[in-house]
Image 1: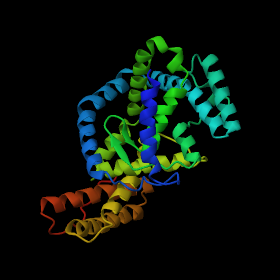
Image 2: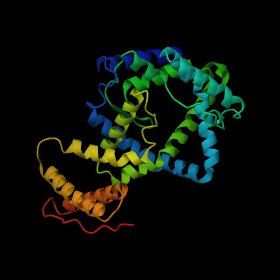
Image 3: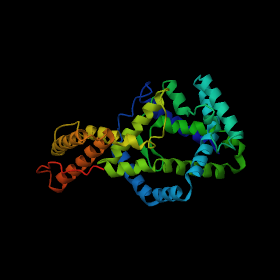
Image 4: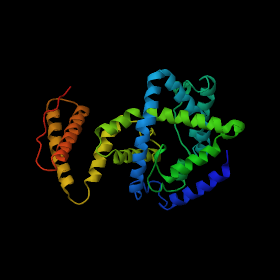
Length: 322
């Protein structure tokens, strides 16, 4: 692997990240390149629908869940040396000790990491990288970016991935065949992550009027979790339960500007959806079902407005509660 060109790229990315100031959370709420990002998102969606999703569906159908879990555990385990190095750089001695213990136990008793024995005996998993290290030292996130295949990111995260690659012992241990190992590992990691987030991606496409804005909101939540040492740090698209909240927030963002016909429609449809959700609550349905009713009525209402040119009203037809 050529490290020097990577370091040149790193310098460029860090320069962009530095423009966001010295706060570790600055930047992601802004989307100064939204037009270009939306174009990249549209390109990615075409690639996802025609290539990535069929591969992911095949993988989930063909590989039993225990085997998929083992592959995931193995991929996490071989990343632990990088996690350990960043634990030390962040001054987290206890976390570094846990990482070292997890790597030792899972690499031996866990059959190379395929079985997470450490978790079973009470040694918790945590993930960190050089992006988190930079955040600890005050490097800002930089502007929100959407990169085809890679997905949502910010310059600090992209720079962190480059440095983590340089930290990774496998980069040097497998030097003679590093390109094959790197490509194979990157491919397996990509499929694993997309397979674990497939349900969330499908949910976004199903219920969101603006999948781009919803994805951005989910990624924003992911970055906030990374900045909170006490929070869990799932991948940005690993939590289907977060999609409804992200949809709601993205809709609120769209509706926050000057009044318009579309925003009038949004306000009307929100009112109708809230009434139907209240009916569900009065009928004794739990909050999850109330939210499903709300989202379904809202989406149907907005579709009505689009079909009828933004005129007329819809009272909110009965929603079957199951």
